[in-house]
Amino acid sequence: DREAAQRQTAELRSELERVRGTGAGGASSSRSAGGSPSLMEARLTGAVLRAEEAQRHLEEGERDLELAHEHAMELHSERDWFRGEAQTTRSERDQLRIREEAAEAQVAEMTRELATLRVQRPPGDLEEVTQLRAELLAQQTLARSLQQIVTDIGRSCSRSWSGASVSRVTGASVG
Image (tube, rainbow, N blue to C red):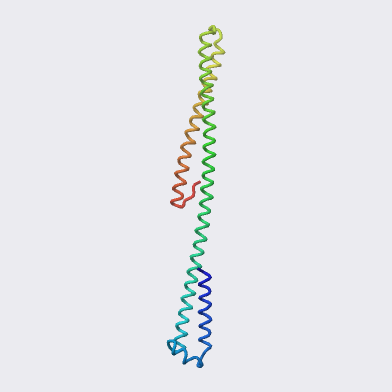
């Protein structure tokens, strides 16, 4: 813990200053405790340096942890954005499917009307039959276009999701 390392470093520094300030008066007690004042000073200096180094490592670890936390939060935001995009795409796809089904139903209805007109109408109404045929072809073209759009959106979603997975692994951005 950083506070404990700071306390220990401060205690070791004050002990070092006390030993340095003791001088000759404390020489006999220092010797009985384990050596000369200069040896005790060297030991305390080494302990202070080790404590300061440990404190630096601890601070570096805290910075690394903060950076990792920030990165995790960015990834969470990115994930939420991708989920929103996926939901929007699904909604658009569903709306296009509904339009496609409506267009197909309209084509089927026009086909039935055309068949009915062929049976019921005299040959003189060729112009109306031609017009209905043109409308039918336009509706069929619209239905095919809508089907292609739905297919393209499905492929785009697949590529987008697989690209997002690759970008998470490689760190590349998806554009």
